[in-house]
Each structure stands twice: as C-alpha cells, then as structure tokens.
Length: 164
Image: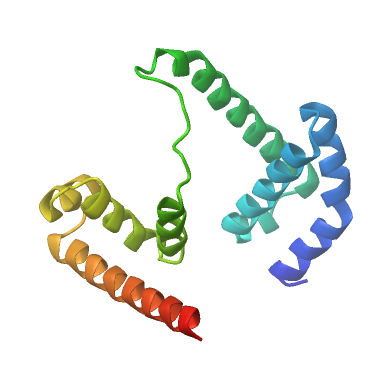
C-alpha cells in the first residue's frame, strides 16, 4: 500500500479505539479527539519513518498520550503562574470595532497578520519587528504591503456588499 493509503487504513481501523482509550484517560471526548488527531498529524509529518513503525496503533497511542500529558503540564503551569501576572484578569470587551478588526485580520495569512499586529497595534518599527522575528527588513516591509493590499481589497468588497 502507498503511504497515504496505509495511513488511511490505520486511521479507519484505530481512530475510534484510540479516542475511546484517550477519553478514558482524559475524561473528555474533545480532548481525546484533539490528542488523537495530533498523533495522526505527527504520523503524517514522520512520513516514511512512520510507515516503518512495527506497531502503528501503539505508536499513535503513545504520541496521543504524550500530547495530552504536555497539555496538562502546560495547563498546570498556567494555573500556577497566572495569579502572579500583575494587573486585573478581565476579558477585553468585544466591541463591534474590535470584532470587525479581528475578522479582517483573520483573513490574512498568519505571517502577514503577525507583522500587521506588531506594526499597527503594538506600534513596533519595522526594524524591531525584523529583529524580533529574525527576518530581513525587506521581508517585513513586503509582508506589510501585501497585508495592507489584502485588507484594502476586503474593505472595498465589504463596502460594495453594504451598498448592494
């Protein structure tokens, strides 16, 4: 079988069983499904190395369990340290303007969105963004230009839709 066919067969044969096992460990179907799906993503990343695994379901189960253990660890660290974060712990109010901005930004490629947020919302100069992200200044400028162009197109389309 080709790699993707083999993975599909393993998925069909073991996904439900793995989710049931992880549900018993996590107590949550959502967490179990997320962990098992992450294990399959890792299998895809492994490519031919995964194809050579003797017991693929056991490998997937181990990866899913380790994924969940990592999530629990991070969650425990966050719960322990969050009270030490200075300032009030309150949510940002979702005003219509903030929601519209978040919607527009969500349509950008993640690398474009990052530089737009750092430059326009965090008031960071291009050189600082480049240094912080380990990118050439020209790349940051290019991403900003492309993002602005995309945002301008989105705004123009939204205005056309409003007037239609």
